[in-house]
Length: 281
Image (cartoon, rainbow, N blue to C red; front, side, top):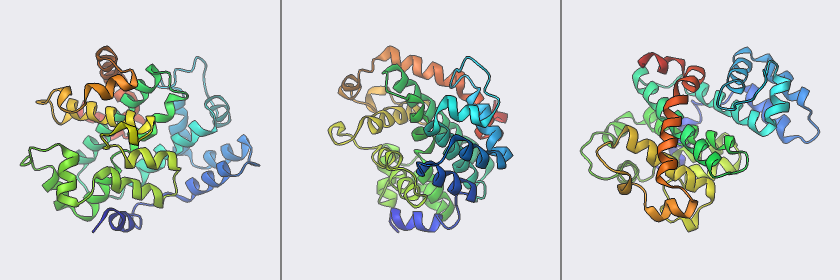
């Protein structure tokens, strides 16, 4: 099967809720108001609670207290609240996956790490509304869960340790596509915005002249996360070319600080999006 066929099968299992569809419709409707969007979010107490926890976390560093969904939408903006909605429903969509809890905890920890790293890099580089980059990191590897559900033996083969190649090269060798490409197809089925789908699809493109800044930052963040978690025996230069860093204005100090930031914020984000992951600490 190719990436589209995998995503098609997974799309029948991993679906976004009716609440998400309704919120998306309201956001796409220019006549909708903040109250319209807030009213739909409030109907789902778990969603509302997640948004308020994240909105009041150090991730956003808002100086005051955000105690209502309406205020969250007003302060953070519709786009950012929409990204939090996507984050919540994406993690919920995979609750039914046939996978061990330890595997899932590890998966979401790495996803959150990538999300924090790309957000920090974007903020450091003064990318407008850098918080929006968080969702790219969080969703960047959903294709792995798609393959896990449908062909778990393929995941075992990709992660067997018998391959000396980098993980995304192994994925292409074993599957014929990368997890990023597969995840992008699922996001397309979910009708998520193109500005989310495209960077995730192209996260392993080495030629930075072919991809936009968001995809470039995801490329960097993913490789930092991979070096920190999966490939500790490799050094940064084996995963990222110096020219790729300098083209974005990223230096070694920024990367070191990004990792420190990730270590500092990881537990607070995991405690909201994947509470069981926190029990490993």
